[in-house]
Amino acid sequence: MAKSFDVSKFRKDLTKSISGMSTGFNDPTDWISTGSYALNYLISGDFHKGVPLGKVTVFAGESGAGKSYFCAGNIVKHAQDQDIFVVLIDTENALDESWLQALQVDTSPEKLLKLNMSMIDDVAKTISTFVNDYRAMDEEDRPKVLFVVDSLGMLLTPTDVDQFNKGDMKGDMGRKPKALTSLVRNTVNMIGSLNVGLVCTNHTYASQDMFDPDDKISGGAGFIYASSIVVAMKKMKLKEDEDGNKISEVMGIRAGCKVMKTRYAKPFEGVQVKIPYETGMNPYSGLVELFEKKNLLVKQGNRLKYINLAGEEVLEYRKAWMLDNRLDQIMMEYDEKMKPVVQTVDADLIDENVVEE
Image (tube, one colour):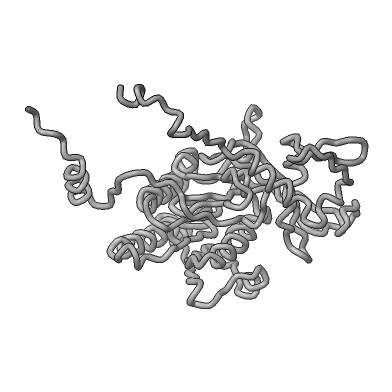
């Protein structure tokens, strides 16, 4: 009789012989809110989740589109609320402590480690050294950690520095995209089974392709393939007062967010989020428009109609939907409606003859 295959021994031998390998599935268990319910939903399929640990998330856009606001501000703040330690790598020398504190980020050394770097190689070495030390710890002692790099587009290669010192300003356009792709690809493989995440910002540039007008992300196609989640951002002027009335003065920005890549929701969907300079972003911003796209809110005259789970019609003006947590009810009922139905079978009803067969 043939000897049965010992799966447990095979698994144990593999994990011992191949460094850095893990077994089983690595589905995310920890999620960090972006501070926007609408963007959370487009990224993760859940209004309260956002970006996961164990994955690499990239926010790419033009200057002033709100990338740092989301990544170094909102996401860091919400990570700290969940006792996740944050390593913030500033490559632009632009993240002032007062600005971070205004966004409710705890800048104390117990909650945040801020590093200033300019070289791709240094960032790679920092993450690699951390992960190796992290793996050496007992599992129960491992903290949850989030790396935030702002931004990848400003990182330099040794060739960049060498050419600058020689007065040669051509730049290293050949090696840099490959180096960025390698950084992201290696990080994805290293943190996949750990409670460690990477969120980074990157720059975009205008497309020269008339058939594909979307802005292109610095780093090339390989960079996008290596990333787990990619959000493209576009800056628009916000010319509205607090009541939503049109004015001529610019009061902030409207951040157009389009999810280019995600495995947790339908990709290529977008939302516009308002970020006023004075008050900051309302977490409900963009939800009314999202619910209109989902046909949860239906335009009826100059008002929007919603039919709740009880079959009751609620008819309100657009501005009124942003008041009194009315959108919370729609989110809650939508989640309830979208939950998978698990059918259970009473054991007493199962035919004993079928069980025996």
